[in-house]
Length: 158
Image (cartoon, rainbow, N blue to C red):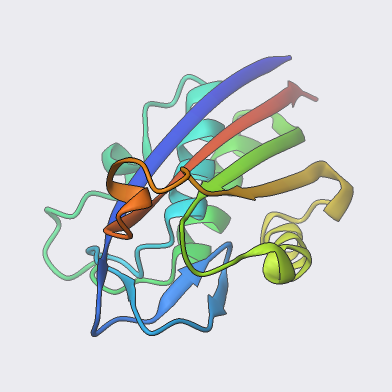
């Protein structure tokens, strides 16, 4: 068994949709990024890649490759990440993720995020845990400048 940790952050942008955990969350602002800026999926990809000793999301899907990944749906990146892990003989044990956002309130959307991620990853929803928290109005998250996400993933060699 191996464990990996991932972290990502994106700032808010008023002209973008908010994508978290592979679903669109109703909000008056989204996140700015080269891709769809799904901060949760990016943190999860980093945790999975880190657990396998395969560097990070920026190494495999760089924003310096012209238009190849510009605006890409992060679910595609997660699907490719799972494929790379499986090519190395790994399978997900479980993952535990935390989204830090002052707004919007995310609790009602967590089951849909779990279902979406499970479908993309080809695993059971009980292998994916997602939590949401605020930062009690502290820091850039508390000032509603952006969203951060953390993820831990346990993988097993099968």
